[in-house]
Amino acid sequence: MSSASDGVVWAGKPWIIPSVVGWTVLVIVVAVGVLWLEFFLGVAGVSVVLPLALWTGLILLLAWVVALARLVLLRATQRYVLRDDGLEIKSGVFTSKSYVVVPTGFADLEVIQSVLGRITNTGDIFLRSQSETERRMVKVRNPLKVAEQIRAVVSTPTFRMKK
Image (cartoon, rainbow, N blue to C red):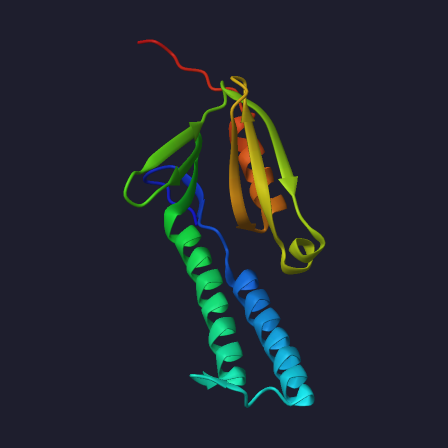
């Protein structure tokens, strides 16, 4: 995403699709396993207001909804904007926080990718400033490419001429 008018080099939000797929697969596998066990043991029809198999399904559905709600909330509350003169990390819904990393304050950048993150091409980027504060960009799509773009911006010295 490039825009010459405001100097935006890259903009993004946490990429949650791999996590959504992962949670969905996990809940389905657990549901199939638990329901199979309930039917195998003959307790699936045991009723406590509703049959046990239905309770199992409802509990797993609730767990899936909570996991997805957390991911959607993460995506809704985080935004990353890399401009020609620095990186801005915005977070929050009700109280908005904005943290800007400029070339003069930049100290270190680290990319963390798990095995699953390498498969899905996602990861977290940690930025440290010279004042020892650390900011984290979570679930970044193509984190190595984004990290290179960030390095190109924040490691370039900025010169300002007085008129």
